[in-house]
Image (cartoon, rainbow, N blue to C red; front, side):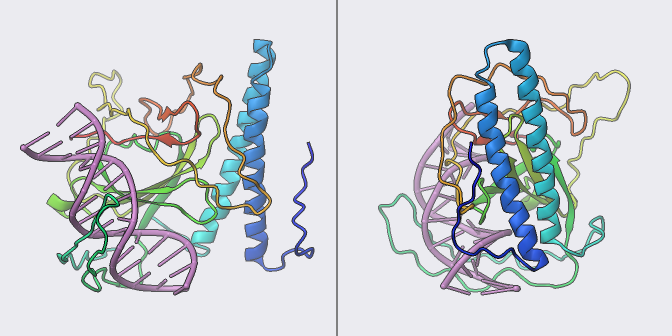
Length: 281
DNA sequence: CGGATTTGACCCGG
DNA sequence: CCGGGTCAAATCCG
């Protein structure tokens, strides 16, 4: 397969660090995509043993690319923030109630202007707690409520915004952003936790020997999201579709960290994965 | 019927 | 002006 960028525009290599990093990210994205295509091809191999081995290798490649992407991207977001453990105390000032109007459903039109400024701005401390790459973004024992979703420039999957389910009751400022990184077989998600939970909802099951109390099993079921938004790579064409004759024949991945309970459901003919934090608790 | 999700508008910093 | 983050009415789904 020809792997050319044939982007006939600029021929000179990028110079600044940022340009180079962006270029590297683009290449990694391309590689991720290609790896996925390769995976699909490889899965057509008839002999089970050969196929499985090949699929495993492709999976490794995808993982490596996702990790590299993660590193580069997180470095880009905070180039020089050594520590993220600092819990910046940001007074959640302003919970003003604004007269939102809002309309929906296409029929109605003409939304009244919302009241101006809300969002306070107290500079300094950035309250990012941590970023992790995981396959199971929903399994963290907290009750999250989704409040938004945005397509991110140059990202093929939208970013999902969640806040603590008790943020209203207890003023808990915890939030988290979840973004799928790749459509590799075990899809990887970049989870960014922001602010510490101040609510008393953390039920960590202590590492006692026998697990008597099963962890709260979250339920997932549902799949309805917009298809991945291919917005990036100039050299990439919207090439879609994956085959619909594979997958769902595997289900056991060994991920030790991040308590595991169940994997996000995968839609049969899309690489978009959806998950939902369990209700109640 | 009520809580969670959806989704486009709004806000704001760069 | 653009892009990322948030709001909230409408909708969904138990």
